[in-house]
Amino acid sequence: AQSVTQLGSHVSVSEGALVLLRCNYSSSVPPYLFWYVQYPNQGLQLLLKYTTGATLVKGINGFEAEFKKSETSFHLTKPSAHMSDAAEYFCAVSDLTGGYQKVTFGIGTKLQVIP
Amino acid sequence: SQTIHQWPATLVQPVGSPLSLECTVEGTSNPNLYWYRQAAGRGLQLLFYSVGIGQISSEVPQNLSASRPQDRQFILSSKKLLLSDSGFYLCAWSAGKSGNTIYFGEGSWLTVV
Image 1 (tube, each protein chain N blue to C red):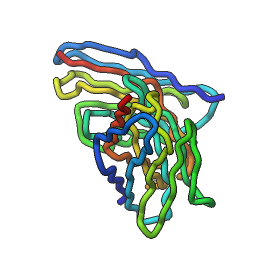
Image 2: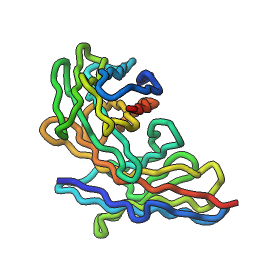
Image 3: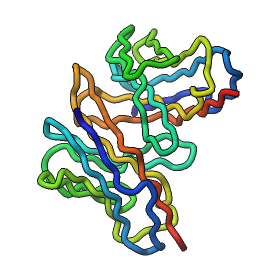
Image 4: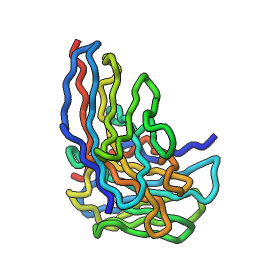
């Protein structure tokens, strides 16, 4: 069974500082990995995803994530935090189970950006 | 382009009353459809998924049911709501392959009083 662990349910950074949100996964097959962002009272929006190929994936709003198979990790980073980055971030892993695409999400990390 | 809509956006219902949340997808055919519930600190819990009309699978036993009367319509229902059914409900769709993105609706806040 696949699973996702997000370390740190709350992360605070200063504006302009590095953002690092951690995600580790467990999957019995080569994983497809996603990061989503959720603003208050809204649905989830895709930030980036890894399927195959280059292990460093660039997404929207200056975010990127690196797939490290040896560490079973897919951490999300952004060099310089902006106030508008304050939101909740979800890591997810996907595979085909029983003929449908099953996506398992982590519990989420709330990012606070301090001016 | 594809779009997904769900409604109502907010709902306040008394305990024991029925529920119907509706979701429709446009611009694609034969999508995988999903209902998730989100609770604070618990991430997203998959409630139901559907790979085709009339084909519904449940991930967790509960007071809710789902139906897919048309290819791009997915309905979440309950005959009698419980207080524990309160939460933020999200409908989503994907093309169904492992690497496909799952796209989410705007969400529906349900408060059972």
